[in-house]
Image (tube, rainbow, N blue to C red):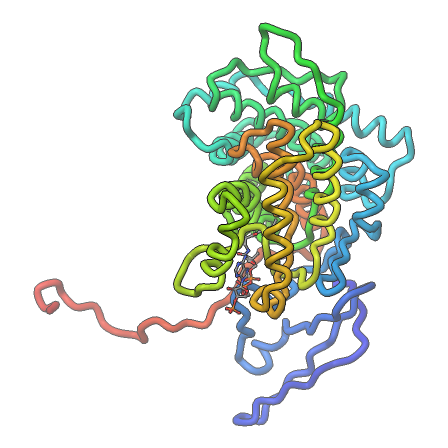
Length: 435
Ligand code: ACO
């Protein structure tokens, strides 16, 4: 624990008179955290915070969010500046190593990533085990987990060089695995990576190229994808990153921990929302139907939620949503499809929801995934691959957090406690005596 301690809270149990001095840890910016590690020892109680709404599970130096102000910083750099001026590979270097690279460092880093883009041929055969309609996220999660079998003997988590090779390998191979999952779904031959292309362009090449004719790469598509990758690269202790940290904290093989992250990301409350937003927009169909669907979103007896709206941390505009909305205008105009009906519908839905008392009072704003699907579909990415694209980008964040955790000499296994509400002690009853 390196956070500074400036004050303490004294907590007293009025029944027993016992008390505990709890240090308040301050970071560099953002709310301080009450260090409750001594609470159970001193007072015999746990804290209770379902959903971790008020619990800092770790210290971290990677990403900072101010949810009220709509601020997102990667290693201190505002997301708006990175989105406008950086590239995904540069952002990956920044998130992993803490500083922006020099030209030579960036060249060396991208060279290391390129070196690892191919998959072992036997790993590719795993895809044949899946039915053609398997969801690509299920295939990606399974194939990433199987990498722990390929790289088990050569992966000592306490060896920094092994950790570095793991980082390069997983970031390099995720697009190859993702594209292979897509090719399997559509029954096309697998396309090998092209190391003369940059990271995002190579993703598009592997997803769209076919062996029988040359693939013409659209620079607008790779620019848009690179931007989406920057925006999705990290988001501090979100559900999938916390999953990677928790799985990794047991000392598990990191490929298995990343696979756990892919699975956590898939849920519609998290990364699966980008796919769900497009399905929802199609379901709404036209602006006339918006009031009906808004009423459903507000009805607590309905499971329907406005997908792409709301966030655990942002109680203001998600800064990434603003950047993506602007990119939507640019991409659609440059593709000559400014009159995209789903984008028009999304804009109208946002406008109406942001005036609605239900959404205003709960501070529900569009999140990163409200507009990302519009861009993905405009550049031809199939809907089932939206969350896979998110997983490619977020792999960088997962790896950065795993590295930060494993290289901390004070790392402990993550092991939450509980408030038990089940039966009290009772004796086993022979089956014949049970009613
Ligand atoms: N539509 C309708 N009502 C909503 C929505 C929504 N999208 N989001 C939250 N609410 C309501 C809740 O019903 C609740 O109302 P109440 O106070 O009357 O009970 C209130 O707003 C607070 O919501 P919680 O569910 O407590 O917020 P939580 O922080 O647990 O959930 C979440 C955040 C999961 C993102 C939620 O807003 C949601 O389900 N949104 C839709 C899915 C989505 O877009 N997920 C992507 C998130 S971004 C990402 O992971 C990449």
